[in-house]
Structures are given as structure tokens and as C-alpha cells.
Image (tube, rainbow, N blue to C red; front, side):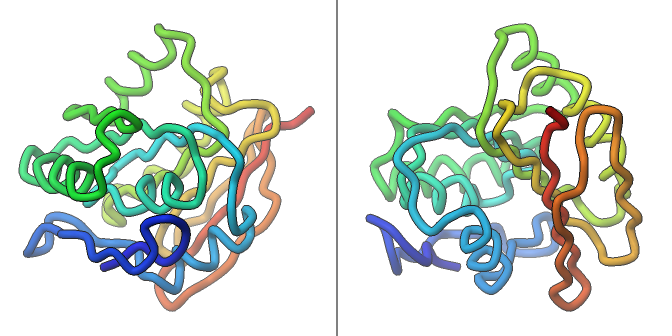
Length: 183
């Protein structure tokens, strides 16, 4: 697994061995960032179910200012911290070792907001629509921001009162859903 573009291009990241995490493939990562824009002048990303931290570190490599990475698994958090240190981005990344619900509530209490929220829950959880409701019903996503869900292609994602589906794309067994805030 590697960073595909930006200041850390081609840097190899560590990942947890076994089936605890499922890294986003380079093909999917490239497609997501191509849709959003290749490089960024600023921005904040919330990476739910962070795994190795690769999505957030890719965003920072491409110009995002900062990242909050949420990962419940302690071993995965250790890998995230190693990758952050490897790229010397400690001042730009905050790692929460807790559940996604606890992290979302903490961030809402702090009145945090993000340009990009990337959620890649374990496919067996089937919680895409729960995330749409949780995030849509809060101010976590900036008005012009994106919520991106990575799910199994069979999981039916629905729009909410606050968020609409701008686009969906399939990559093998994976579906990427791009949601935006209704104006």
C-alpha cells in the first residue's frame, strides 16, 4: 500500500496483517481523489474506520491541512501512528482510538466540521445508511463538503433529509457513494 500522489507520492505505508482491516485499493483511492480534485489548497478530513490511515495521509499528501482518523482497533491505531510518524505528519493528524459513534459525538460536541468525511466500515456491519443519518443530521460536514461511503456493492444507500447522492461507482465488490449536503 502506498501514497499515490502529492508530496509523499510513492511512499509505502504499513498495514495490519490479517483480516482486521481491509485497505482501500489504489484503484479506488485514485478514483475517489480524481473525482474530488487531484490536489487541494486546504481542507480537513474525518476518516472513520481508519485502518492504516492511508486515505487521510493521501489527502494530506495532496494538500489537505489536517485529518482526524477514527479507529477502534488498538493494533490498527498503532499502525496509523507509525505511518503518520513515517511521513512526519504528526502535527496534522489526530487519532481517536474509539468507536465511530463515540468519535462522532465528541466531534459534534467540539463543533468540528470537515470538508471530507470518508467512511469505510467493515462490510459486514452494513451501516452506510446509519452513517448518512448521523452525519447528515449534524454540522460535521461543511456545506460544500463530501461524505464518501465505501460499502459492498449490494448495500443500498439511501438519501436523507440533509444529504443527497451525487454519484455512485462500482469497483469489483466495492461501491463508492458520494453524498453532498442539500442547500
